[in-house]
Image (cartoon, rainbow, N blue to C red):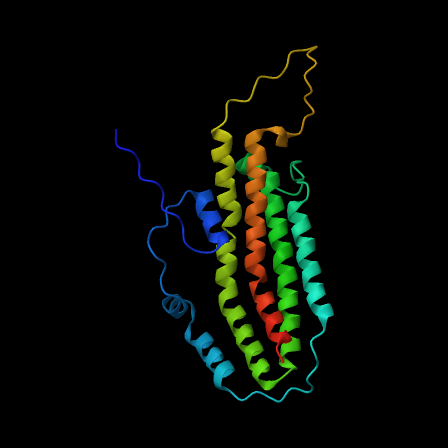
Length: 242
């Protein structure tokens, strides 16, 4: 009998590889070149804005403050807070603020989906606020850094909508993973008969497949957090350079 060829390893960052594994996707074709992809994403309005940021005359910064280590500490604390919200215990109680139709559509995955969406919103708000503040600080250090801050602002405005659209698929991919793991397990045992001493208050996460899914959920959100913090780390590195 012919053996199935092993799945080719997925190139790219940890987040991409993890999502490909969850979706059971075989990514064998090399991705388009970055220049080709950017050409598709930039319309003429964004291209003009980027050209001005790269070539236009920028005003002299009002002052040249030194880098404040407290800023880096604040960014690190924000990241730790988000990591704690991901790694902490999951509330598996059915969500109260969703419609019956949505609850029926997502079944047992509904509380995990709500958790995933809430963490994604928190990451977006936190990283967006930090990124704007760091750009403002960068623009006050020197003309060259002011230009870098302007380029980052244009890139964020151009790429964020596409990034948000791609990241919005994460809860759906995790939902498919939840269903696949659930279907791969043995049927749920029948309810115990009256007088049975079986403890029916054991948490659902005691199921091996569910524990595996919760680990996948945390891994995906932590990898997404890394991706969202890449611009923060880049701006911090620019601020440290004198």
